[in-house]
Length: 97
Image (cartoon, rainbow, N blue to C red; front, top):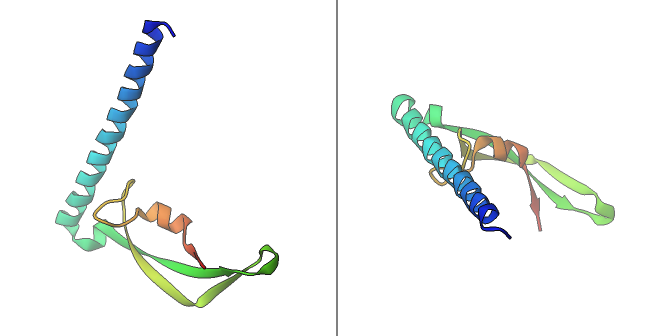
């Protein structure tokens, strides 16, 4: 591999890594600003999570009689020990073993 191509790849990777770090830091700042200015109601939300168990034949039984509420942050990345709400809403069904 020619040195110029290697140099371009390394700089591109470092640029992507730097962009990801800046995005995470800005996301953490905006969550803390929301928490400081509006309290927990602006920074956190709750999502209802249902549980399901696998049955024979690839079918599932969903237990909707005992839903659980999980706290999440209104952010792009996991912050303050909580998952982001957009991710938790997409994963709102948890499988039991």
